[in-house]
Length: 193
Ligand SMILES: [Zn+2]
Ligand SMILES: [Zn+2]
Image (cartoon, rainbow, N blue to C red; front, top):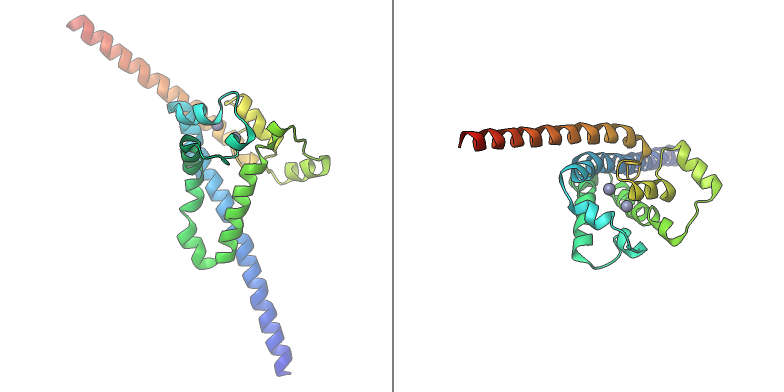
């Protein structure tokens, strides 16, 4: 009797631990991609040149894109993109260290996987279909972003693409407005002077 109760309690604790780990893994990937896309990736394409030069340049190889080389600039762009995944570690670690570690490993593996297109990789049809259902970015889809920085946002999750593109065009319009305001003011002060 005692043993059965003990076993049941242990079973419940184990289920709870697994559930917590799954939730933390998901939360880390979802929030990391959200913040990385909206606060780093899209603004960099509008206002910066760094990410575009480092991550979208021609004649790059797989090791470059997958941040597997020692070039400090590549590592720095990779670090800025990955920072949003790291900021949650102190909180998530308290809830589930296992889920946090799995989330970070999966995030890192996805960086490598989404850049294998350059190695002439073709995602097997069943896997591509599963990714499509789960809104997960495949290497083929991420490659579209490398070819055209206006499309295919969302490093890990494809559902960030639409809002990211809306955010991109809003920021671009604000940048244009600021530029023309500055130009008008310079013209006006030149005329006055
Ligand atoms: Zn990339
Ligand atoms: Zn980009």
